[in-house]
Image 1 (cartoon, helix red, strand yellow):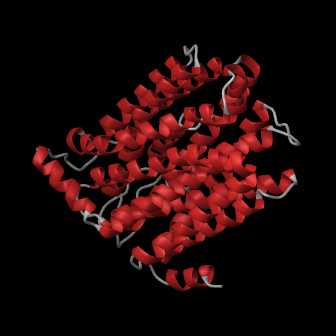
Image 2 (spheres, rainbow, N blue to C red):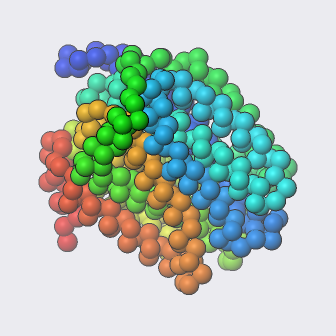
Length: 413
């Protein structure tokens, strides 16, 4: 029912210059991209016991994947521009299925981290390419809502990956969890291959000099650079919260099991339901307002997780997830508003910063955790969230109608 609500029919608006594709295949691509990326988060306390490793060491199973995405994203963006977006999306999804299955063969933490890095190399082929596909195939008036629908797909995929990993690992061990995820990956890749329309835009090639000139031109775009930094901060906060809260809730006095930690990510589904609605709001009110609203919600949620009661913590996590997803969809759609060419490369550069933020978000809070536990980690997260709003206010231009007044109300004392 939710997928139908985000739009499955051609656009018949009089003001649109092109017909928008069906949304479901792009939602499914988002599901595929994020099914595996954070699947080890609910497994971290279990992996700590299995491999006799430290909190920081097992967090590398998250860091390795996000770091690989950051490294590979710019190259995949250009590859998609050259050979076609659908082709890159489909073959990257197949690569995810293969490397996920091979991760189950790991006999040490180092091997598991290596396979997680390999998984991450294939992820931007789906993530970055799908966003560029939306910007090229949807009319400008519907880009934010199409991006929001795609983000909902990533949310559902992220939830399913964590929930499946937690449940299967609890019942049959962590290798079985990776095998199960690999089967789901392969099924999703097949569906995307069948249902995602081939792009209408014709890919064109650039020589090495043209590629360098394109990168330099994009790096001189101040608004795009600011958007990259915003993306860095957004994923930093998400990964930091949902990685280290598993240690917080897996220990005393809560003592949640691996399966229970997997189900904890059901809060993602709230964000999946809210984000498409927020996308329509951003289309009319503006990107700065959308970012301000999303990060403000996330700040309230992060502070809420400091409560000693489990219902309050879960509610706080739900707010963090919702705010982060709204911010993620807003920043992703803003890329199209500030770039007129080389969008595949632009999204690739954005993805580099975005996942670099995720990599640091999986590692840096570990130092704060060692120094002051969960409260210290939350303090770091809130500081980054406030900085994110400040960057958007300073460097993003006004877009949309009426959103800036609301944003001033949101951030005024």
